[in-house]
Length: 284
Image (cartoon, rainbow, N blue to C red; front, side, top):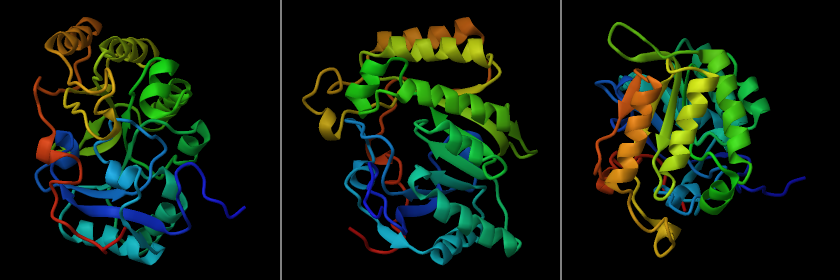
């Protein structure tokens, strides 16, 4: 009791940055931006994490439930299409309380649960009725790679069970008349160096368990940063051959909903959270 766990999350929600974010999939960002809240801390410790200053090193400031509710209200007032909760899992009690406050005040937007996929089934089951859109990674297909890359040997078992529960709750992606996501599941697959075969295996699993009607977002933006530098194979970008084999698998399995990022799409200055103007408190 009273001790910090794996995520190092405390009793007050910790946020690195928030604001209108244009860098998500088209039905999430839309024309006015997604109302992204980048929470500090994470359930994974990826050696290649682009967001390591806040996901692993704890940069960010603490916010009360009232302050978090105020952030959500501000994002709605600014015209954001949704509330995009990025890596929210360590802070769910505070988030649920803040959402209740803004909704009691008559404010509402679709809630995007933006997750690495490493979730307990019970956590996702408890989100029924609280999340409208699940934007979830399916990063690995084998425990060895998950352990080496993210310190999460149980990733595949957990992420697959969680994704099936997300699908049970939200189903196929549904958009409004303006093309903005109202509910549904988007599954992200980041192609990792030396692990294109695992992305293909994840696509095979999706096709078998859910079917090609699930929206997939194939991401080619892997950039070696943080502890990936100097570590093989994490220290290099993906090859054209790795990219092509994943694209061919998407086509072969009949996926028609979603997006494939262009080969050579560099993260660079558009890393998540870095292309928004700084907002919020000063924190460590």
